[in-house]
Image (cartoon, rainbow, N blue to C red; front, top):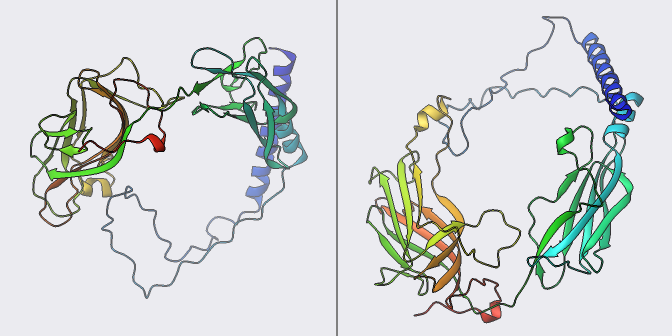
Length: 371
């Protein structure tokens, strides 16, 4: 064990001893057993899962309201605890990064913001630090202390959507979770260099049709269902077919097949402007098993039932003639009136009809669906 690690262990042991002392002193001020005053009519915590109707009977309006219990007085952190936080949670921030485009070239003159989280026991909050990348895309931060550092990068003509840009420096984290700065191995941030927007078919549309009606063909170019030619074949079913309006817990299935192509979930990506070249599957399928509302209310099962499924997909169809990004929502029970028995498909579509995987979007170049 290194001297620094031994010091950290000693400090942690000291902090635990101080916390134990606080707990023991607090126990000495508690009333003796049997002297506590019960809270009148305090409601029990509900175990009903979110989204499940609660059928438990409510309390009478004539019953007395529950008395509020004043919280115990807060105590300021002891000097020992403050020193512990100062040592373990307030450390030198040193960070090395590089901004690169999708071609592996450094991105110069990109604006970089560093948000520093501070928590020392006596003060907390955020500090903002700014810098810019050099001619090869490198940048660094240093000369201040904190708990965590968040990085944001921007430059005109580039897209950046990094989903993991927070770095921890606190010793309250395990060693493998703390960021170890290395000037010879900077953190790489990929910025997507825009290639120029091409005309895309763009629209939002909702289609309704009888549930259990069998396969429904959707033409993404026209934004219509029931066409002779199509891109997607959607099949939505539910059991039972007829049910009360707004029912929950029933079994249902949804499947989407692609004509002459496939689809792949967009997921978390650093950029969304280009459809993938590979990785497509011919079908997406979702199966929801039936669940009992009563069992969920009584705590017999964990409520995981969902009334719809929604996701964003890249789609290629018609043997590579079309590439698109589609935000798709499938719902097996969208009845507007009792007994309608309707299913729903909703979509926002960005489609390149020219066989190009470029999905950069410019509203001034948007194409309406082909009639």
